[in-house]
Structure formats: structure tokens, C-alpha cells
Image (cartoon, rainbow, N blue to C red; front, side, top):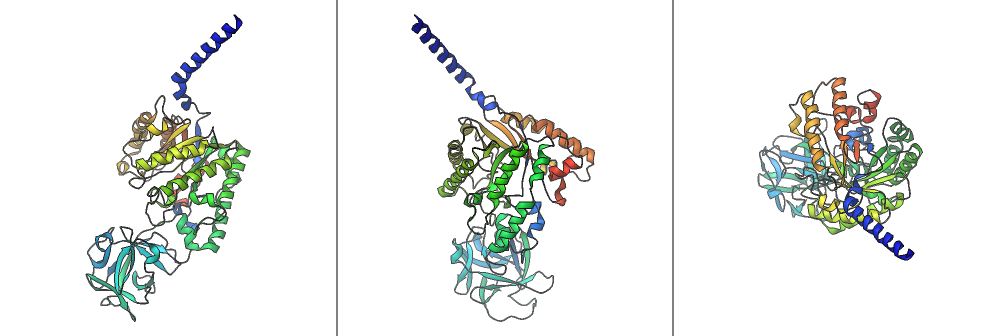
Amino acid sequence: MTRCINLKTCLFNLIIFTIFVITYGGRLNQNPEFKVKAVNLGGWLVTEGWMKPSLFDGIPNKDFLDGTGLQFKSVTTGKYLCAESGGGTILVANRSSASGWETFSLWRINENTFRFRVFNKQFVGLDGINVVAVTNTSTDSATFHVIKESGNSSLVRIKASNGYFLQAKTEVLVTADVSEVRGWGEDDPTVFDMNIAEKLQGEFQVTNGYGPIKAKQVMKEHWSTFIVEKDFKFIASNGLNAVRIPVGWWIASDPTPPSPYVGGSLNALDNAFMWAKKYGLKIIIDLHAALGSQNGYEHSSSRDGSQEWGVTDETIQQTVRIIGFLTSRYAKSPCLYAVELLNEPRSPGATLESLNKYYKAGYQAVRKHSSSAYVVLSNRLSSPNPKEFFPVANGLRRSVIDVHYYSVFDDLFTDMTVQQNIDYIYTNRSSDLNFVTTANGPLVFVGEWVAEWKIKNATKEDFQRFSKAQLDVFGRATFGWAYWAFKNSDNYKHWSLEWMINNGYIKL
């Protein structure tokens, strides 16, 4: 009789447990230990030049870094050099205005020697004396020197690797066949009026700009001074409980990452975990820069604005290995709270198919080493569907969707008043957040936001009200939020949470 009762009891308990799992299993994902109130340590282990412009001051010929977009107008034809059809054929000098096809992206070999990449990603080279853009392999292309007129003039000559200067012989014939030049006359077909159309200032640019020896010294000094132990103490004592730390893919190859990157960022991340433990903070590791760049921006360490991540399966598999490396290294730390698989992927380079594949594999890489760390999936930039990764995330335990809400980039905010900006947060952002918050779905993380806007001459009280509105709304996010960033240059002081706290612009 006793055995029968015990058996019935076991069966009853099993049935109750099964009902509980079916009914509430999905909701277990909705109960984090606490809501994250974090700050991003941006500009530290992944360089963003706008956050610390002085980091680039010592680079020789720093106007000519990787990814610099150059446009050349012939002084004789009065037209711009252009890669015909965007690449794949000859160069011409017959365009009256400059845009994509007329912009040449630099690949820096050293401070004086460069390769030129065109719109369709071919490199400029020589076919005899004719200038063409037909090869997709950089090493098969020509190298060039850009020689400036003395003084502040924008006039330049371009010397090819065959030792001759380029000339716009006609509007449809650009050659490299002039051996001797003199003066800078307006009748000289070797003279071009150069315009710098765009610049990149990321990790690739700073390390390749300085070169391997100097870069090691500069980056070591930067990593050891930009974020220090007292910053963690400040963060912990001002109402925050976590930090989100952007890292680059090269960190997994420390201390000898592939050129031009230099070792040392892993040691800095180790220090962050040590300081976080001392001051009771959690850490979200954020893979901010993936191999080949997932969005083409400098903050993903793109060399020239191109997106190469996801184009081949190898970039995905290598990124999975990096996630596994980071998780295994810090899995035993009580401070590891979450791993963000990829920051701000962008279409069309990062397709929905490639990201779904990567997010599933990246999740498994985390789970191989940690059963407790949350896994964060970042939405794509400008995607019209903020729930596009829900089908993947819904099947993953302790999964989080990262949404970024800024009120400074979109032209929508250009003519808004202070009150309209605040109302937009309480109405539109609240609605956006409610839309991605579901009963049994993934947790929601506002991984980046800032109390900056397009309002000019706003008062301190305006900023306080705007900050409060975002704290009120983003505080409802089921996983929490993270301000961008802890430190920033004086030109972007409202982007610095440290400055905002110290000057009374925000109260947490």
C-alpha cells in the first residue's frame, strides 16, 4: 500500500511539474535577477575617433587614413575622376559632380603610399599606361603616392607605382605616363583639385596609421588611462549596477592579433572584471566589431566602409569561436551577466538568414560554457521589423533582444521643440517598447540611448526633463538599459554619463 501511495505521489508531482513547465516555462525568460541600469564603456577597447580625437594626433599624414574618401577634379577638364560603371573597367575624367563612383577609398600602406578602392570594391591598377579598376585583390593593384602642393592648397598630383604621374589626357582617357612635372598650372593635366569627402577613425585606422611599433605604445597608454578602477567605483556609487563593454574580434587573438591590430585589450578586459567584482558590478560583453565589419562603420572597425561579415561562412564561424573564447574565459566570474553576440548589424550585408544562423550558433557557444549568462541578440539597424529575431529568440532560454533608441540621428527630430521631443519619448518610444515586450518572448534591452538631441541652446532644465523621460520609459524594459557612454570628448559632453552626473543633468 505504501509503495502504491508513493507511486501515485510521484506521478502527481510529475504531472504538476509538466503543467508548470508548459504553462510558465516561457515566462522563466522574463524574470531576470534584476533590471540592468548600465553604462557603455564605449571608445575604450574599440576605438571611435569622435570620442577621443587626441588619440589620432600623433599619426603622420593623419588626413590620409584607411577609408578616407578622396575625390579628384582635373584642372584641365574641370571634371572629376570616375571609375566608369563604379568599377570593372577604365577610369575617366568626365563627371561634372562627385558622388559614389567618383570617390576613391584609401587603403594605407604607409604614410606616403596607398591603394585606391572604388565603389564596386575593385582596386585601381594599370593596364600598360591606362588606369583601370578591374581587380578585386588588393595585392594585384597599383600603389600610389599623393603629392600635395606646398601650403594649404588642395592641389595634388598622383604618382603611380610605375614611377609616372597620372594625367587626364582627355575626358575619357586617364593614363600614368608623365615622367617630369613642374609648377601647378591650370593647363597641366597631371594636376587635380582634391576633396576629402569622408573619413573613418576606428580601430583599424588608428593602429594602421601609427604602424605596429608606435601603435602598441599609443594603445597601451589609451587602454590604461581612458577607463580606470576609479571609474568603476564612480559607476557603482551613482545608482548603476552594470557596464556594457564593447570589444573587437581581434581580442580573441591577444597578445598577437592579426595586423594592424595590437595586443593588450584582453588584459584591459581582465582588469574590468577584477574591478567589477570589487565594486559589485555586472558586465555585459558586447561584440562591437566583427571580422570584416557587420555594418561598415568605424565603430565596427571597418577598413574602408565595406561590410564583409556574413558574406562567407568563415566569418560567421570565426565569430562563433570568438564568442566561445570570451564566454569560456569569464564564465566562472560572478560578474559575467550577459554576452551580446553582435552589435548593430546592418542590411544588406548582414542578412536575416546569416544572422539567424549566427545567432543560433553563437547562443550554443555561450551555453557550452555558461548556463546562466544571458545571450543578447541585437536588432539590425533600420530594420522595419523590430521582432524579426523573435522566432529564434523565443526558442532560447535567457535570451534578450537589444534595441537602440536615439533622438539625434533621424531627420524626424530636426524641427521638434523641447516638449515635442519629450512627448515623443512618452508616446512613441513607449509604444515601440511595448510592441517588443511580450509575455512569453525574449527580454528587452535598450542597449544604447543618450540624452542628446537636435535641440540647439537647450537649458539645463530641458536636458533634465529629457533625461527623466527616457529613464521613465526605458526603465520599463524587461532586461534594462545602458547609456552611451561613460566618457566622451568635450565636443560631445552630453554623450558622457560621467559629465551628465557630475554636472547635475541627470539623476539616476
